[in-house]
Image 1 (spheres, rainbow, N blue to C red):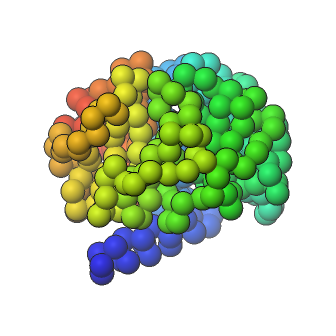
Image 2: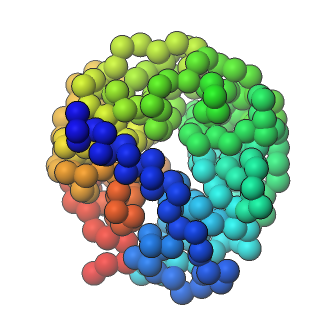
Image 3: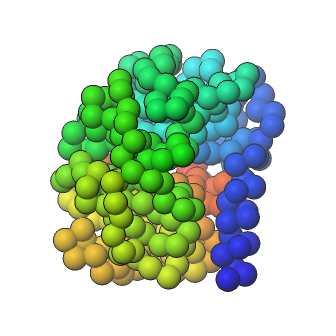
Amino acid sequence: MARRLTLFALFSASIALGAALPAAAQGNSVAELAGKTHIHGLAFDRADPSSVLIATHHGLMKAAPDGTVTPVSESRDDFMGFVPHPTDSKVLFASGHPQGGGNLGFIKSTDSGKSWAKIAPGVDGPVDFHQLAVSPSNPDVLYGAYGAIQTSRDGGKTWAIAGDALAKLIDLAVSPSNPDVVYAATEDGLMVSRDGAGSWQQPILAGVPVTTVELTPDGTIYAFAPGRGLLRAAETAPTFERPAEGPDPAGYILHLAMDHQAPARMVAVTGTGAIVVSRDGGANWTVLGGN
């Protein structure tokens, strides 16, 4: 129990990291970024898969393979929820806070993050989705957490309440085969809904906190449990195994993203702010930009 309390006290405190990222972030390295801002999301850049998009407390950044970080645009808004369109490399979705305070609502970029437009306020908005997920099989279906779990069926133009938010929710992901099957990483385990987040079944991974969940196009679930490391299972038979210790097995990882064109390639950020990459399905990891 002491481990859990310490873990999630650290997780909550990390949200407030980074009060002063320089206005010109040109030349920052991935290693320097962790000390200057907090990372809220990751994605391989579909237009340039060798690079990683990093949603931060101070705007959207791009990290090159050598670890050099540059801002994608001049915006220094706080991107909390962040997810790329599953097939269109130019389209990104996000939510969070404007630099001057308040909530962004649901926002969208159609030029790879260079500019953003508010698409909808959401229910009881403007919302601040800390968790945001898009269906890989139907990109018009999205889920966001703001008080309750909200869903959109028209690409984010309108939102409705899908169901109650889970206690201690950390991450959301949608099945690649069914837009109504939603996974939730929580402090109490990994939950699944089969009715569009209207109700939740008993944990498919119970007894441990789960800090992130992601699925590959073939339906492999990846989840990270502190103390157990990176775990995986098939959606059709969710018995979890550990392919390897994974990054920071004794600590935790906050975000995990797949290269959906090459699912064995993954990127993650650890609790210490290190961005690490695997090219073999999580068996081995190297620091982005490291040798």
